[in-house]
Length: 250
Length: 313
Image 1 (cartoon, rainbow over the protein chains, first blue to last red):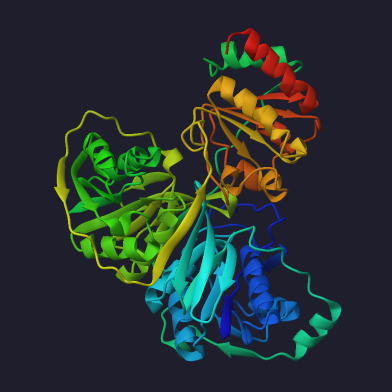
Image 2 (cartoon, rainbow over the protein chains, first blue to last red):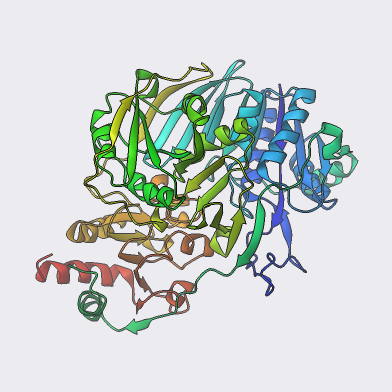
């Protein structure tokens, strides 16, 4: 079966994000960009399915600027087979991304789509579920463990109270949580091979999707800052202050 | 027109997030209806009807909703959506699972995890793990919103809303519930506890979390953990506090052996008072802590237990 893995190019998770002083957004100048960490987990899971003989082909898709081809190249170096880059300018909202992905699914007919549970830039956490809805497919979000058969997937999910297992009919969409796997680093031979793997270039118009944002971002600001407080010397002093000064111990 | 709030509950009672969402919903300025979908859920429905500000409680009591699946829940909400201007659900693993399906089918861009209602069509929400706050305006038409409950005060009780039974929605038959492993604990829930005691990588083992649990039990606190502690296998995933785990805002947050990665801070920096115990005085957690104690936690925590015991906690 074919597995489709949508991957997003985002500011690297180690970068301290700064808000622009004019409050129009965050500063992208000279900032390291990487694959969204949850999507890396998705690529890893797809490649493992291929190594186990359960997936026949892994297709990495990215929707973003020209540079998002680097993100696809990373997925190819990890072991994905080919890529699709849907070139866009500016922000694309999750709903538009889901519509483009739906059109790609209609064409490619994957049995499973695996993507991150959220991207660490907009933290929206919508794309996988929206795609599943538009396709009329079931979903397994926040996946912790996957068991895949011909026609069903059994997905253990991380939920607020613990873990939940659902069984979904294929085709389906799965979104990854942190503990599904540990993504591999691309090997040198992998990186060399990736250079020869094909990446198709498309635009939203090729899929008949209008990717214009519909939400209006009025401003982006710094969150309220907390001031560092005082250092205490002993446990006794700490408890005294919590009780008498802060009044948070009964 | 009206706002529909999807209640979070365990059939017997409402989860804390529900009353807080009602407060957010009332700020939209329209009448508020609550949807309670469950099975044998009259306890939760009764509690819902007592929330002040709620006009009507819709109760879909059906075996289909014994375990909430995204596909069935989205289908139910969609079957009701015509009558509503806005649909709100909690930004918990429940709401985050089903609500984007509803938004997609309504062709509406969802606004995730709002922190503040600026105007009925304008909201603040965190981006980049809380490193920035975005103010967004929704286009005219229906609004689909998830709410970060800890950012709102709970609606009071003492109301008397009308309760109406409604039929179950369609069953898309795409998925089924197999089972769940829920953490059993006598302690309060992480997201609603007044005090949270959290451990990080510095705890070094699963066994040493028992030290924190003993403190937590004396303070009637919940126990949380950093991602590092969860990844190391010291505690289960549902203990995780942080942008990708749970967001908490208790009266008191005690961070023990937690260095203070941005990811973790995003999940607890709205706590009223933060106390940190760490042996590394350079740990970033001290930059946001109200009270910092530089100490070896394996000495400080047993000492704290002794001291609490002495003081009658």
